Image (cartoon, rainbow, N blue to C red):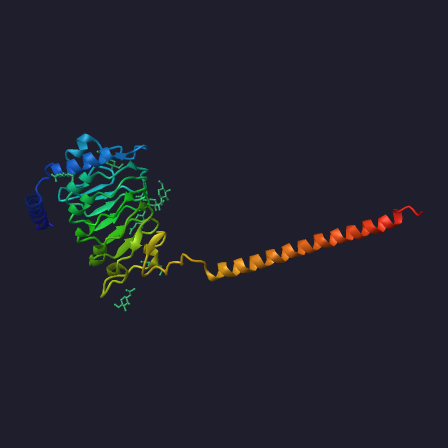
Length: 271
Ligand SMILES: *[C@@H]1O[C@H](CO)[C@@H](O)[C@H](O)[C@H]1NC(C)=O
Ligand SMILES: *[C@@H]1O[C@H](CO)[C@@H](O)[C@H](O)[C@H]1NC(C)=O
Ligand SMILES: *[C@@H]1O[C@H](CO)[C@@H](O)[C@H](O)[C@H]1NC(C)=O
Ligand SMILES: *[C@@H]1O[C@H](CO)[C@@H](O)[C@H](O)[C@H]1NC(C)=O
Ligand SMILES: *[C@@H]1O[C@H](CO)[C@@H](O)[C@H](O)[C@H]1NC(C)=O
Ligand SMILES: *[C@@H]1O[C@H](CO)[C@@H](O)[C@H](O)[C@H]1NC(C)=O
Ligand SMILES: CC(=O)N[C@H]1CO[C@H](CO)[C@@H](O)[C@@H]1O
């Protein structure tokens, strides 16, 4: 046992040499300060996101801030799902340069996906699903080379899907279902080649004006066969009904006329 103690203290010394005591990081401070300003937190879920804590978010080995995780004295993960957050995503998020995972899913965030996301060169997981984010998917997003999850489903994103997304070699989850995206699914993404994971229709459905493989062909804008048959049958039945009515009316009129005539005959005074 006695042999192990020096080893332990040696490794502790080594750790403290190679992991410098976390010095306050100004980039993370700027990132968190601006992010907190751009969020609205009606329920107070971010109760301990305070100015004081921002100045040294990774003071302990781990972060004290709800949803934040540290690694080597820097924020590397933000998991703020299900927190009823409103407001928008500050472009200063880009100052959290060590961020590997950003999950803001299932809130009520509005506004665009900041173009500045592409400065997060270590980003591997981006989950912004189930919000009310609008605007386009930034064409610069694929500059985050390590992305392996892009989950943007259930927002109100518009515009087209940047073709470069298809060339992200690590991408294994891609979901933009239930948005307002339009235009073609880039062939580089819809029909990925080689060993790259492919994404099926469930990644794309619920975007009215999005088209191309693997979505089924769009319904033609003209009248479908069913509609034409329906209209034909309908008008046929209608004219049949009309002529029937006309015949009935005519028969009735004739009947009444005949009755009247007969009545007349009967009522006619017999001189
Ligand atoms: C912030 O809240 C989290 C979870 O509620 C807790 O683990 C952490 O210790 C809190 N930090 C501070 C500084 O109060
Ligand atoms: C968010 O809510 C879902 C469904 O209620 C739950 O499964 C998940 O664990 C929650 N996530 C967090 C971080 O609370
Ligand atoms: C979203 O969060 C709400 C609570 O805010 C929870 O009830 C719901 O199950 C969550 N949905 C998902 C898909 O996590
Ligand atoms: C993204 O977040 C939602 C809601 O919190 C969750 O249901 C979904 O599984 C997440 N996506 C991935 C790829 O983990
Ligand atoms: C997808 O790629 C295969 C072979 O790489 C090709 O035969 C097929 O026509 C392509 N489909 C589309 C819709 O581009
Ligand atoms: C689409 O792929 C997902 C996994 O990526 C799978 O869970 C789902 O069942 C697939 N859907 C269809 C229709 O193949
Ligand atoms: C230090 C640093 O990286 N600052 C940047 C923080 O984010 C804003 C908005 O993207 C940039 O303008 C700063 O240069």
